[in-house]
Length: 440
Image (cartoon, rainbow, N blue to C red; front, side, top):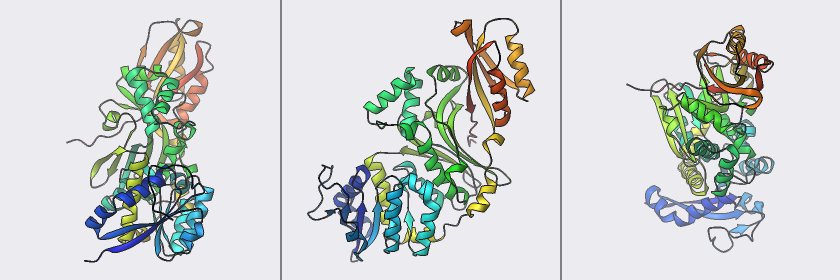
């Protein structure tokens, strides 16, 4: 059988773009042998044509001229690896208008403008493939869109940012401070020089917006997601939580209840040490999904990096070339934004158990004081521990674990606890997430 030649253009020759180019060049023969497709790198467009990259392009492939890609009708697929949003959005819209299918690894772009881009793709009878946007080399998008199609997806719990997971793993294993763990992550290349997007939780929110939209069939916007980062996490709280049987992770959570209300949130979470996700350490990612028929399934692997992400991009290129992505994309149906907004549960209405740490004065009546405030806000104490030793103002750390309550109850209680004369500083509060393990 004759090989089918598929010509590909890449826009953006940074880390991911270079990885994609490398795979297209080095793995062309093996891909052709397995699929019958001869992937041919037609051009790479970038404003920088001088810097060294970890791949050598054929003569004449690298250009600064986007029109070369747009005006070449033999190029069927355009890969956008520019990063950012505004310029990347214009590149994708131009490629779609020029009749190119689009493959992208740009999570921020799809999280913020995905609904608009999807409509443009449908209008131009083209598709957007985006496996690489959510978890690097983990094929989570195709799993949700294809492998789990028969399921009503009820919930997902994900560790989807390797930087944060590395930092929290180091703080847990070595007792390091946040600052020291971050510096170590930067020295090993797991964190950017400016790690704000990662440690703030925004990167995880981008991925959750994309995954939730396809899992729950709704047009999700970033504003639907409650986001809290890890930059205020103390090694003391990780230690105290560990003593009570918990491990701390930054989780991206999507949950749909029996009346289709959807809770979307990213925040530090204490989970049981025997949970599958608790065993995911270092820069690795994992997503646990609960479906109505399959039960719990878990996906694990490297969630970032040049070659894992490039692997997902090239897999999308192949899927587009085979015609699979166009069919899947054409049947990507979502509730429109005006309907989806009515289904999003506000963070105040979300329920959880909570970990609270108070620096309380070691004197009579303190326990009664904070217990009364919690009780007044309809919060029941599940367990507590008090360590010896003195902190500021002759205080000792008191750790409380609550039964399930609404976020708005906890918010009010924290405000009142901070006003107590016997409490020093602001109370620390971390949510406890009970992940339902699927066991026989």
